Image (cartoon, helix red, strand yellow):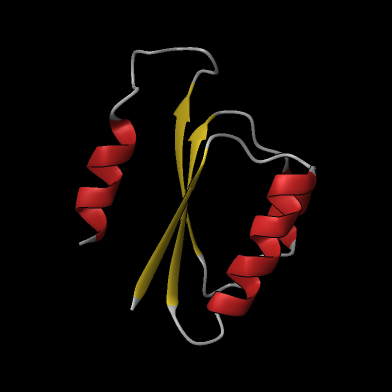
Length: 79
């Protein structure tokens, strides 16, 4: 089964830490993809992600609506 998690930014915080724990457990048995929409990415959480987790960085500028539907394109590509 493929699991896809979409998060707007990746920094050090409560929701990000919780999602990291969920992804860590799911990646033991499933194919996990994580889509980071905005360009706000802290590299320290990425160091602890299992190598089986596929990270997709869209790189949308925070607050921009220019690529607001880019996550739909990524989801389509994962099928």
